[in-house]
Image (cartoon, rainbow, N blue to C red):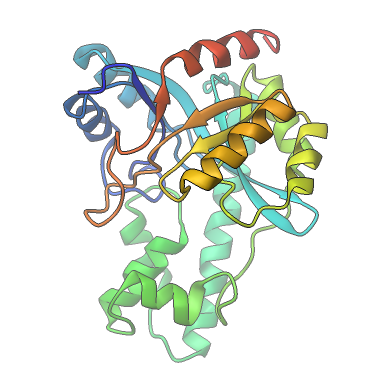
Length: 275
């Protein structure tokens, strides 16, 4: 049991995960994870439930969310930690993002209909279960209609980044997103930079105020972890790590990847600079 492990990238059904926030905390406890951050996309709606479960089960819950941003045409994801998740300013911003997600989902359903895929917006919303609308919910509706047999097929044939039915998100300049996080007392980390992210993008994000890098992630092999560890040191960035678990039985599990809890202390100290 890894009692000093923090898993700082976990999703629930408040965005595109398959578990409740309480179930996420229970999984963390059962995996021996000492601290967890619920980082649902564009929402903080699960943090209160997760925090209550954490208090009962002895798991520290770090408030977080995962936000989309852009460096020119390139979309990146930013993990925001320790921000004031109950602030009105953040709530207003996330409300706009939720509406944009709904409109994007409707536009993608329309394109799919034009391509002969018969699904409805209601079916997509049913799969979203009252949470944010995301592409996995569209894929689930496509599977339900018989248009595809797997989520992977839905993305490969229709709704992947280069698919014929994809509608790209509106650009949110990274500097603006990072400034928002800082204004709410939080810190901003680049999520899962992966194999192909140019160093120049990291440099641009650093210039915009980036606080850290998600060095440890299931998609990162040892060479990537070593590369981003060195990059973090070069730019004086903090480090984080997480499973990016969505609760999919075939995907990563909470505790599969993470970082020592000392990382939380470093984040707290950095966040205090923005308070």
